[in-house]
Image (tube, rainbow, N blue to C red; front, top):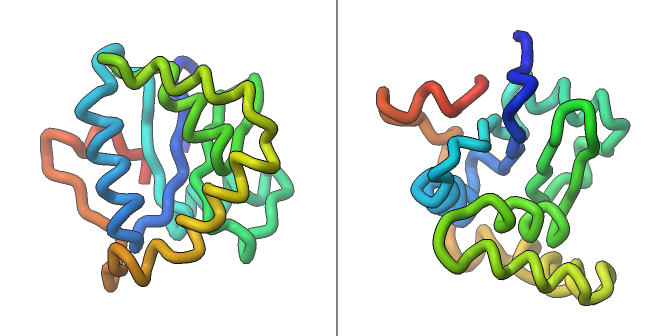
Amino acid sequence: MKLPENKKIILFDGVCNLCNNVVTFVIKHDKKDVFRFASLQSELGKKLVAERDLDPNDLDSVVLIEPGVAYYRKSTAALEISRELSGGYSLLKNFLFIPEGLRDSVYNFVANNRYKWYGKKESCMIPTPELKAKFLD
């Protein structure tokens, strides 16, 4: 599959309820149609992870890919995503001044407890027909 050159790609845990809710939230606030999505469990997600030499067993994280530019993980990915969201959510990017280690420790705490707190699906979410174009897998 050819990746869209003018879209940022969000890789997410497709079986995580919290992650799926975040994807729905991002779609709702992505008024400029900046993002496309793929689950980490999909063939495309696995391919994109491998291309960036990321450990597929160490991905309890969101990954934001800006094709031809860079990729971001964990709290940095979340804050970079917030830059593009409508409403006051773009102001969250201002938290990038906090050292990444501190931000990621909070991120890791939530990531390590996400299944316990929010639950887990048996399989990846299936987008509605209206949203299918936003998903790459």
